Amino acid sequence: MADGAIGLAREAGAEAARVAPYGTSGGIFQVGPVRIGRRGPAGRRLPTPLRVAGWTLAAVAAGACGGVSRAAESASAPVIATSAGVVADGAVGHGVLWFTLSGADLRFSAPTASLPQPEAFFAALKMSAGATRSIIVHYRLDSGSIYGPTSAATFAPQDIVYDGHAIAGVTPSGSAGPPAELHEAALARAIALTDTGDDAGARTALNDAQAGGVLTPALRILALKTRAAADEHEATADHPPGPDRDRLLVAVLADARRWSQADPDDPQACYRLAGALRDLGAYDAALAEYQAIGSRWPDEWFWSTIRIAATRRIMGDYPQALKILDEMDRLHDVKTTMPFHYHRGWTLRLMGRMAEATREFTAGIAVQPDFHGAFMQRACVLARQGRIGDALADLQTALALQKTYAEGRPVTPALQMNEAWGAAVLADLRSAAAASPARPVDAPCHGYWDEGEGRRERSALIDAVGAPAGL
Image 1 (cartoon, helix red, strand yellow):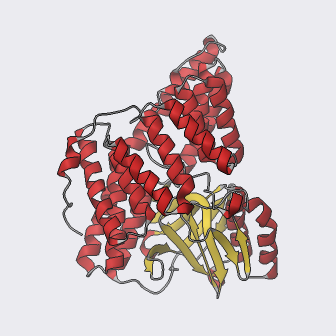
Image 2: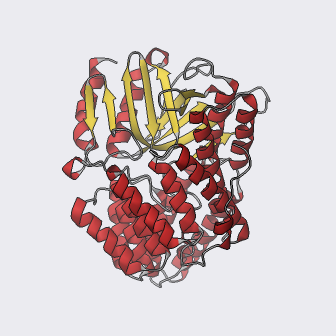
Image 3: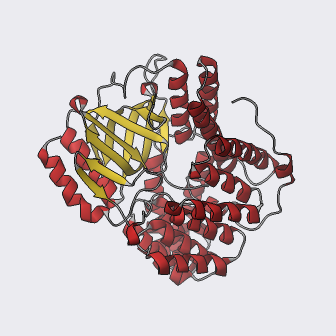
């Protein structure tokens, strides 16, 4: 890259130090010899605000949204996939640029010579990382391979969109590297389809990966991780609490245990296991897992603590959830992160402390103004305070942001439910604004984010967990 890009990297350093990436190795975005540290108090890494435990379009942890466009009429036309999120990590050097997004198990890579505007492309990545603002990446689903050193599914970005501006990437025929073996390409495709929410497509691709060749131990771990992610997404996004959801969560639990046994140094396996235990009602076991994560991997202190607080909230122990978050802030000063404000606001809302919840969501939006979940939650607390006009504006913003990040996403029952919910609540708020704009209403407060909140009985299926078929 030219010296100008290195200058830009230095400029972004002060802003980047506000908050560090989640799930990166070392937490840096680097340009040649220039390294941008993103460190918190006492040198500890802090998370990217986009990744919020307990949130997606329909259920769990936030992070990135994505999709697959199937608009092409020709069967031979390439399938274009979409991923979105805050840039978490990346580098440029030796003629190659690569980057990752917070909350997505994808790596994007391109030769700098293949980028029509390498400086503009890199600048947008730097701004996303520094300002914790999301970018949208479009890539060909058939351009994937498995990057050996990190076993990451790697794709060639066709373009990125940041702040409404599209910047061209590689040519449509470009790839992220040498041609992949059939089973590796299928596994990369499965990981991408899981990121988009196409759970059925991901399972088909996993079957193709198994049929295409022998999976090495590293690839088998990736396959277990991917199947667990697809099952968890389907369970929480497409099934209400009940036996069907529990059966999928039990499969997640089994795969997470096998994943953890195969790769005991990966904390993400333990997070997946703990989340399944929590959703199956084994709260004490889940809390023990989260506490063990924080003890064994000190860099995971932020997310393990957020998950512990969220679990306490789900159990209905709101005072303890709030105490954990407040103690976390006292020790580490985490006011520059969306998850802290979002989970604190969520807890305050459930406690009926609407004015305080409003302030928390407002503080979170100041940190990350493109997270639709915070606008939805704030719409609820504003409506309950009789601020109908403000609630309506927030809901409209939330729905617009959600539409942007759901573009190209497969049409699932969860997505249809979310769209129907948004249209109905929008109509209710407009009617309320016309009739009595200062009268408190509850219309935006029955959202899908609260599905699964409240203590449940421990599932009897946990005791019969066996290994899922295959892999």
